[in-house]
Length: 484
Image (cartoon, rainbow, N blue to C red; front, side, top):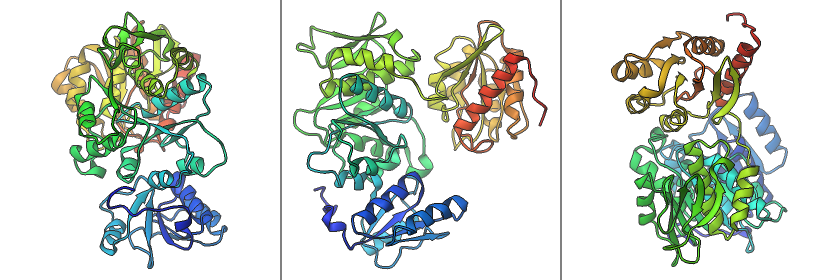
């Protein structure tokens, strides 16, 4: 039991009045699970659209579930527990009301952790500003290559509640956790955890960089075997030092350089382990080749090393690391090669929605025509431009906050040609690709790494990447779409 947090078992939920904050990917499974366990459930949701009404109708058909749309601020009378979905800010009126009433607030991950069975599989948990999904999927591929029954779950889109309460037997789970989820999961105690990197993000939600980092650091609390950190990002090691772990748990670093004892790293294009070997001061174990990582960009090699460290902490043999990395296929829109046209490579990294991710992407190529812009979310771009200026052949700017990037380019890369597309309609992407093609030379890479969110022009980063790929294929075929 976690100090200050009431204990809870499956039997305790029967007859309790539980409020679920939010619908969607996390809220619907939470409401369904709570009702299945005998709770009386009220779901509150601030928005009231067609999608929400459909989800509400589905839940209310279960019986014992009430959905209140259009009011996410008022705490329903009689609430004994609030279970929140990740996006709700800690200072939301609903949570202030819960605090005043002495009602605990848990996230869906906290609920899933508490509802595990006695023989539940251990969790290998991953967080970080960027690279979480890729690392978790790499980890799952490695675990599968070792013959283990596993699944990639959590923030990756598969509800932990569905997995915990389901009938599928697992040996171990590869769990992606966001800072939002970790904030509301005080009881979580993973087998081993990793923080991949830390950069300013979601500060409007957390309130400060210190609070954001502290929530990320919760992933290390109570770790049993390994706390995996990024040698190149000292803030991640600081979080390990601050964590209260089980006796014998070790700090394991990963680095793109030559590893020291208790680290994984790279030696002559070989991924090696100096942490989980008989004599880590004198021995190193070969795990895989850099060419086994897809794609072998520096930040993705770091992801692979983190995944390997967690797998090795669970006892996975070296051959499974190699086989898992070879079998892994990245999700779309993550440094994805779309096509070569007239000797120019076109790469879609629409998932690079912040400056830290964009920097990793830009570092992967030598000569770049950069397509960037969108919603900045309070970000600044000076450091990104300074670090990448020598690589830039040209820049094409799109989106609502493109002016912020244009100003940073003017300050730090004034000689780089810039095309500023003063439009935010979806047809702007086709125009951006045509302008990028005009700036590019054979051997260059046209890179969509926006460093911004997509919602000013597109529903999500997937749709933005799809628009880029469609424009590239039109360019390759010689077809010029009608101007919009």
